[in-house]
Amino acid sequence: MRGSLRQRGEAWELRVFVGIEPATGKKRYVTKTVRGGKREAQRALAEMVTKATDGRLAATRATVAELLNEWFDHASPDFSPKTALETRGIIDRHLLPSLGSVPLRRLRATDLDTFYATLRAGKGTASWPLTPARIRRIHGVLRVALQQAVRWGWLPANPATSASPPRVVAAEIKPPSPSDLGRLFVEALTLAPDFATFVVLAGATGARRSELVALRWRDVDLDASRIEIARGIVIGPAGLVEKDTKVHAARTVSIDGTTARLLGEHRQRMISRASRLHVGLAADPFVFSDSPECSEPWRPDSTTRRFTQLRDRCGMPGLRLHDLRHYVATTMLAAGVDVRTVAGRLGYRNASTTLNVYGHFVESADREAADKLGRLFDQAIAGGKAPA
View 1: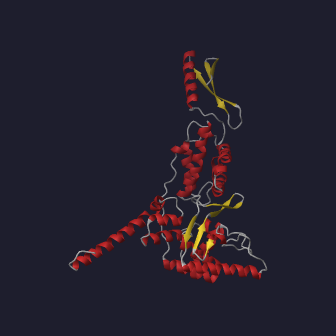
View 2: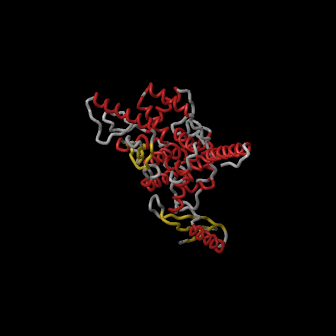
View 3: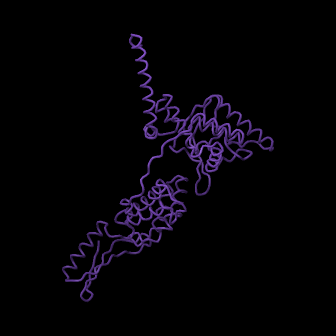
């Protein structure tokens, strides 16, 4: 690391080369003026060189906007389409308008905390107060981008690591009851039988929304009463994208006789609909589709809107489509199904994830089992004999 000094009247001008400007390719220097004797100037220069060598002097004049755009271009090829779309939206909607013009070397943790406070208050780029979970997602994008700036030598340290985004309190899981699910199904039957089949399949398999809308009829074996979940459909920057599942692995899920029957009736409706319109089903048709040939899947966001309208008609405010997945998990655990089997049905990589999410339901089932054992012992004691 090179440094130089020259006398300017009664002061000394110090200059240290700190590398190439990543954004422009130009050489970057840090300068400082010191008043006093040459020896003092030499000591100050040595300290500057040491800091530059250790990376403690900022090596860029780039702004936050330049970093975010450069980082996104660098990192997004490894993102899923959904992550790329969400991340780009966070950058364009929140980070660039609020922080884009700030020079990286002047960005401080206090700036970030002030920014998060405005988002929580529904000010600045937020049209309404953002939830702590959403703000932490924004913080996560910024933190990763700033960490890349440190790796590139644009920054000596990451200010986001010292920031304090709001704490997220895990939401209580409130799955619907069996009667609630029945009401949803009956109401859907009167409005749209196709969506009623979707509700039943979601409540029978615990599959993710993206997995259900990606189902094709080749994935369904009605004779064996099982389906293969091998793909998901998400919304990417250029529209719908068909990809592998969230955990990058296919799984086979058994279905009950009623669900299999409803799927069979659903398929016959689709065939009849296509016939009335004088078309045939596509070569590889989707299970849930509004197109006559079933060549296009339902959009994930439109599917959620349909469910929201359905639950509102049924007077179930707050119920989410994702809660049907919770319904499957909690119902199986309450029935005594082992955690590993539940995890496999839901498509988790391992049982520990299921325990993290549904641990208190497992404890509840364990308590119920203990109480049942206790009652057996009470009965045996009352009968004057050891339990069998």
